[in-house]
Image (tube, rainbow, N blue to C red; front, side, top):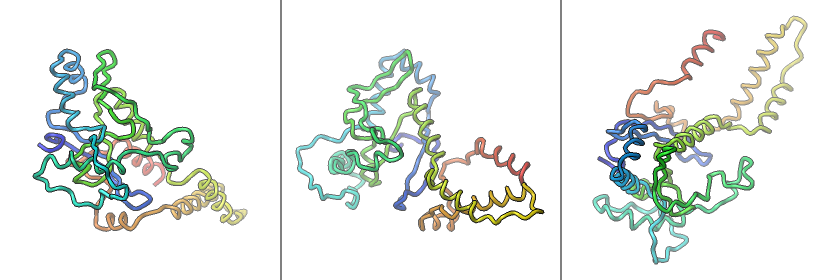
Length: 276
């Protein structure tokens, strides 16, 4: 097995940030995974199972940087350093401390965008949890958290892949709700701000010539819709890396199996049947 054990299935989507760097979201199913209700029953009935369960996840997922007395130069940039030799399995635990300046969150102006004036939109500070626990009444699985300014991470992924990440164990109601809320909020996020939308709409309406006496209301509506879509498409930003990815035939997703679309295919079929 690998870092997460034996992986049965994975599905991921990639996008590009405003800086043109890759940003991905992945779901991973581990081989031998059980239904969450079965896991909850084992956690509820066996203290030994609880100990093994939390020992496994605390080994994979960390929420604190190693304590060290070494003084790290603030100008040190761990992202541009070569990773340690892979056979040296203990190296990541020693090198992780060099990431303190990068991985330890400090709120910046970007944290308070989109109306988050009085809070960090990345949900820092996190709640400190002294020990991992399971609540048998609510089936809530809570992993240990020692540092309120550090995301859940794996030291090997951090050191060898050279990037920030956030790992979540989705086995409790709270974790599932948080993941679904995040995914739903993310995929419905508009690339264009509200004030930009209003400006584009007003510009599109201004470009429409006065309809003649023989122009029907339906044709006028189609013209308006066409102008609005043209204005929106003109504002879409596509990075060169993204263009190259599409030209080479790569899509936005990567998966271990062929996945079936949900809902979107029904919506597309409905639109084709009624408006094609």
